[in-house]
Length: 268
Image (cartoon, rainbow, N blue to C red; front, top):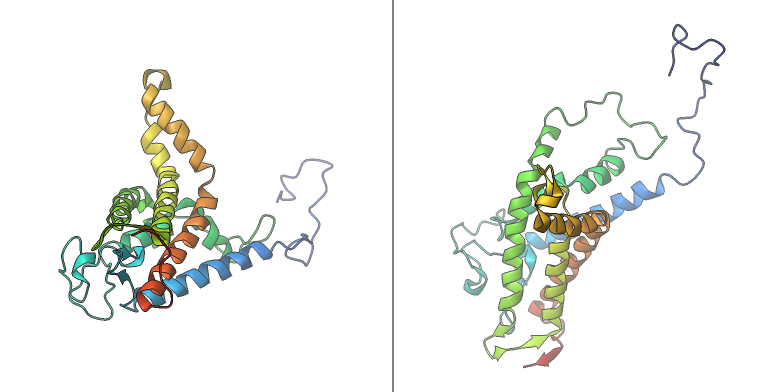
């Protein structure tokens, strides 16, 4: 706001209003939906991670991504690609080797920052709506200073996507030999969406096309950068889609492992 001392001659002072915003539309709806959506997903994921059961379908070698890879001594051996080197205490997730990095990747994601800053922290909740905090320091102080770790969390997320891809491939080879069912489709769709979300990351786009002065001298990287840029535009949608595919995949594997229904098989 321009002060009286520096206001241009003839300019009017800003009107003093009691309302926090003059917006009359439902600007609060988007933050509310985000709170409900993210809150529901986090609740479901937390419950599932600490259930310590119904994560492996031995008949078809289906493994939920919430438990991949299983590294505690209570895990099913077939689901433990990297051994069982952690104690089976209740407080330790069975996928303790991957979940912290996935959480860090999502928390520091540029889109998710916008989502939970606006919805949970009201900072700000919408355009032309005042911030819910009196002071603003950006991401220059702890704990938000840790958002700079996103570029490193991307590498971990890419490795975890490779692990999930390996899980989806192994699921085609059950004890009965090669097989193909609805569960395989669910696992494959989830992996494809995870790769699309991971590769659409802003850090990935910078890695592919950053520090180049002339794209014409790097045609391969330019083509890759163009593809990543196409995905990057859809980063927000992919962020939500992958939350859905992760929950759906986990629920499907859990339902099969619990015996709620049988897998629809096409081959074997």
